[in-house]
Length: 264
Image (cartoon, rainbow, N blue to C red; front, side, top):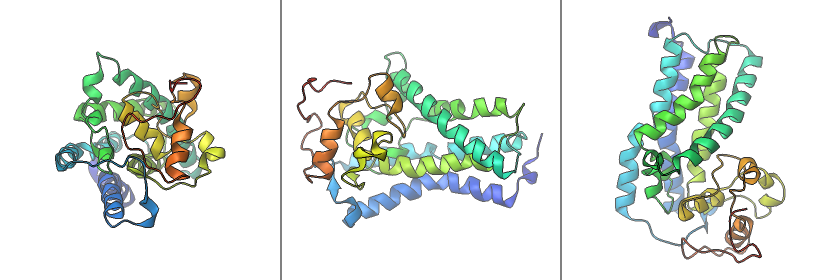
């Protein structure tokens, strides 16, 4: 058992960053939108949000530092002590792959009637704001984080895992998840013609919130396409927002297609 006092300054610094980064990113995008920065002028849904929603999201955000608390407990238990460069990259890569898989299937499970109470608080926000990214119930945040960390804690008993590699994923997640919940698009209009064939966008996740289903993926479209849960009009809507600069005027707005605007 490693004592708290054995945790290095570098590790404490990373834990602090993980604890506060979600709020810092939400504040950054909030200011960007408030002051109409050029990067956030392509609005997805041209609809108002209420002060009540913002207050609720900020109240829920108290759970966001749980990521750092659980990482701290892992260190205190003597886990994730490998410090090699190779282990950093392997740990970060492994976490990235596992997080995509875990998020997709746990997310779909949370939409089942028996488990939806875990996820319902997050979905009270049908129209996203930068603060939606840090608005979760304590139970959802705990289940998500434990599902991420427990497999690596088990792996660590056989192959040493790198704390900084694991933390690097959390840092990337907090950054990406923040602008994935913003109500504006900043990627290039042709994004979906190349890297966007695999990776998601802010519009992609906005459809999940506004329609309450589909587009379950965290950072990629891979599992949604594989299991038929991607909205078929997503790319058309992305083009409308990002190329035509025409924001959507209703949460139910769709672009007609030959498949009847159904999930793929």
